[in-house]
Length: 335
Image (cartoon, rainbow, N blue to C red; front, side, top):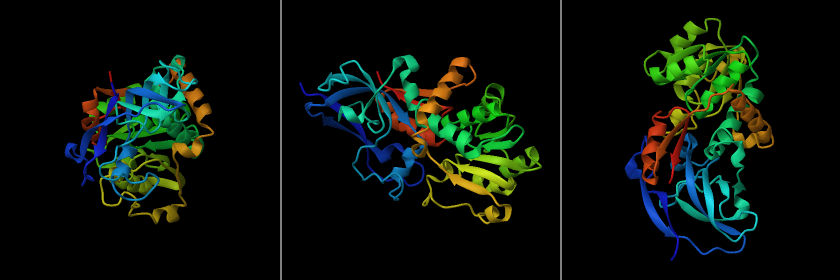
């Protein structure tokens, strides 16, 4: 009997925020295994804001997805059939691109075997994956906060932001964190140690930053872009540094690449704006992951996940993610 798999495909490019009708599901027949290949049943699927970018049709780091094509993303699964000695049946594996489906066939060389002893397998889609590397790179390499400096983190209750907040606090920085609900604010201040919380849905962001940092902001970890970046630039100290990680506030716009309207502020204040992503820090990734694993083991780092169950939850969970419905990392668990 042939193995079959379900895959989520793009039906229409979203106009504004993605909706369920922009996506569809197709069933595909998986091919027989060739030498060096394995068949994998996925157990965990990653959902991340960057996935919105290749739905836009605009060229960039993520090539645009064409209508009818299957979405991709990170996945953790189990090898259920193998023609590759290095990945026997039962091996847990990570794939950077075979998400958004419940099963697939791939060359063994495309996959990475996972060590179950390092922690829960889904951590490789988050704290031990792109999320952890991104947060570490932004704090440790780009911003390098010093004790007493004021550091602002936007999107602070998300996967990257929540780790960045804690790493900055471990460095002795004073942290201002923004998110979209009072519940997230309590988590950020009472559990993660942020000094100040700004509810961007209820507060005037620029005024709040000026009130909480009357002498100015030294450092900004930007996950949001848009009005957050503009407000932060207005409040930066002369010579301040900004780590440009994401721009989720603009992903539903006609041009998510648009810059801030007050960009000349960077000239007036001599600001440093540095864009970065996890791929640029691939060589440092093992060191960063070991550092994060040590912090988790010591109880010095809190890692939180928002988990939804079932293949049919993929699209609703993705739409919810882009509306800020997650706290920490958003994952879909398949059984």
